[in-house]
Amino acid sequence: MGALNIRDLGDERKAALTAEAKARGLSVSELARRFIDEGIDRAQAERAREAWVAEAREGFVHEAEHLAAHGASLARYRWIRAGL
Image (tube, rainbow, N blue to C red; front, side):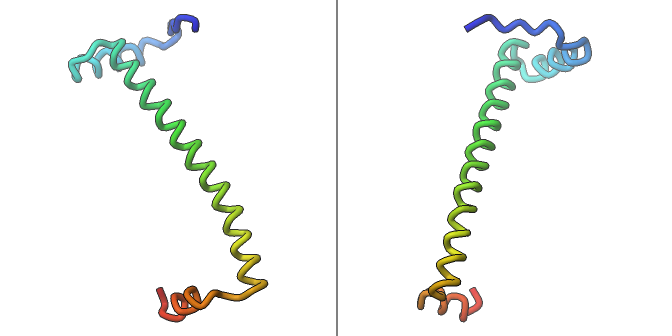
């Protein structure tokens, strides 16, 4: 893996990063690593959520088709009837 070198960060971002690192009592490098880790974690969680939604959507289609073809099961009928 190649070295990460961020030269085009910009003066405002560098100043903000330095101030935040100082406020947290961390080095700029450690703060940048933590921000990167948090961003990666959020991206992975979002991808997993999107995959779950896509899979669930297929299940809902199947369930709707089954309901249309066979009607509600007794347990579901009672649940719907009870207004839950």
